[in-house]
Image 1 (spheres, rainbow, N blue to C red):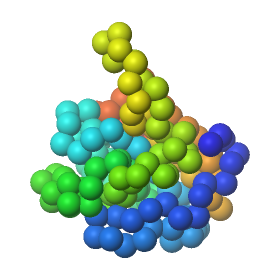
Image 2: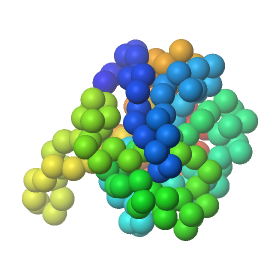
Image 3: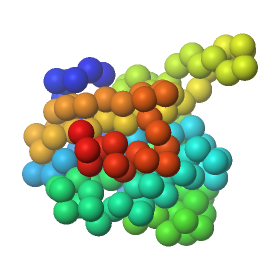
Image 4: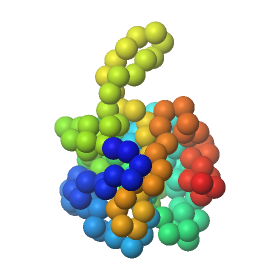
Length: 150
């Protein structure tokens, strides 16, 4: 996916098994962020940044949806543990990740592996991708501010 592309209509199912669709957010901007794993340090920092600034994000017209390949049960525990106010899509088969380009080769400690590429898509009110942040561009502890200051 690239800037200017329309995001997919069906995003996936959240931690409670509800289907999340792009049209659910029509008229609002959507921060669709992909992260590697629940309860890891960077992913927790990123989620908590978005949680701590959620009211500001909503005040600026944004909604937030997180996506990882963790299970719905893992997402439910992660949400409860960190009081996350936004849905988390359980993309266990990586359908959305692959469609959006958030799954691919990663280099860690000199080793190449396949995995989730930390990526955030800012999608406008009509479902068009306006901004993409990926990899080292994302400062997990300051991620909400990166979006608000864009």
